[in-house]
Amino acid sequence: MYILGLNDSNSAASIIKDGKLLAAAREERFDRIKFSDSYPTRAVEYCLKTAGIEIKDVNHIVFAWNPGHELEPQDSAAAIRYHKHFLHYIPNNLLRHIKGDKRNKKIAFIDQTISFSDGKIKLHYAPHHHTHAASAFFVSPYDKAAILTIDAYGDDITHQFFIGEGNKLRSLGKTEFPHSLGQVYAAITQYLGYRANSDEWKVMGLAAYGKPEYYDKFKKIMRFDKNKGELRFDLDYFTYYIWSSRRYSDQFIKMFGPERQASDELIDRHINIAASFQKCVEDVVLDMCAYLKKKTGLKTLCLAGGVAMNSKMNGRIAAESGFSEVWVQPSADDAGCSLGAAFYYWNHVLGKKRKFVMEHDYWGPGFSDKEIKAALDDSLVIYERLENPEKEAAKAISENKVIGWFQGKMEFGQRALGNRSILADARDPDMKNKINRLIKHREWYRPFAPSVLEEYQKDYFEIDSPSPFMQKVFRVNRDKRKIIPAVVHKDGTARVQTVIKETNKRYWTLIDKFREITDVPVVLNTSFNDNDEPIVCTPKDAIRSFFGTGIHELYIGNYRILKVR
Image (cartoon, rainbow, N blue to C red):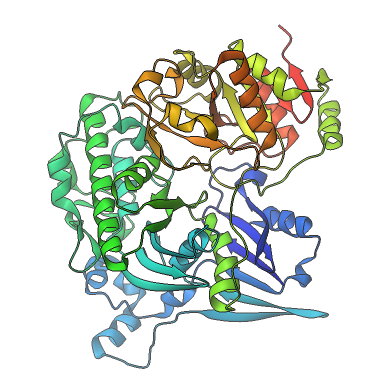
């Protein structure tokens, strides 16, 4: 049985066959528009091609949103109060709510059928946060786990607690819009002069340089209600719930000062606001984890939702929440819901047994040496074929060169994990500035991540378990901070990727060859792209990015391209 999962916010497609993942990809990698929300036409084409089938051969298509909530009355008192500016869109629903009309029931699931001349496809619409939960739990290594999903909103829900057991999900509580941590994070991002729903990680990176002197002010306007199990915000400080272009109110400006414009210089106040807000977010989510642990009594936790992309927060959850094991979906954002939608239908709806664990994130397109050579020839570049690209690449990195590393199948998530990566020597204290200036063209304060051989992870980082998806931040051991300064953030931490031979032999070998040369089993790893473009997907993408930036050498399959000076 083939099930195709779709999502249109961070547009993506995933396909599974009999409960096993075959392929998953984001539309942005094909249309080259970062965070593309177009229908995932080419991602679907890729999934079908990988599966070796046509669309008529798909048994079920599952969409990761439930449009049924649009047909329901707005039954939250908070929603009625804070949606007052656009209640003209829902007068009939409001009247039914006020009159207590019992005929309108909650719409939990919608099914449709598409008929072809030679067959039918079943089309299903799944609850958004259930697909987030499914994307984390059903592909995790756990048979039973607590689950926390948290984002801006989906089907009017902004956070939900679950227990996952076997092939079933059970909801334990939720927060409804407009009380949204994701939307508040977007508001602070915009207030600090960045793009809401795009640049939130800039706030996280900036936070390490500040002091939390505004923490008490944030604590007054955001909290987790431990009695009701819900997020609560003082909405007088925000305007996102009325869909205003400015997401924060005059009252917020009165408390925190004038907003920063994108062209304004960063000053201490901006940096300290970022630090204060990031700490408050972490503390609020830790309160949520403590509540969930007490409610479930479980030791394992799965995380998904856009807010779960906050790796600094995830690191604190792993260290301080009391959960002994924490698994974060590598595509925790909405793109991962395409995967979750497929597994939700297979496991939870159809009741099929689980038979898949997501041990790696390499589910996108890959290219043979023949295809790579054709792209190189078409591009009229000078290249050479290597017998041992891993050894040559390791040598180049040890000589302080920055390389492009294009190998195997593309990563599905936002993190480059050694197949579509830019790699460099973490020992060079000036390497971060070099890459930011010459290649990534991004802000000075944004850190770069280390990839470390799993065998040596504890020698360099305060880490208790593997971190293959680069979704958690850990403290760097003090005696190693001067050895790998290019990947140590201002606060002494790093967003770590642990690498094993079983899931990426070529990348593991490169790092091991680098270790043999330098005695350091760590390299700097960042995504293979220029600022504000998606990670490269095809050989042609890699060649364009190589010649458009300051990368010294490109290792693509078994070939190497050098720049002629």
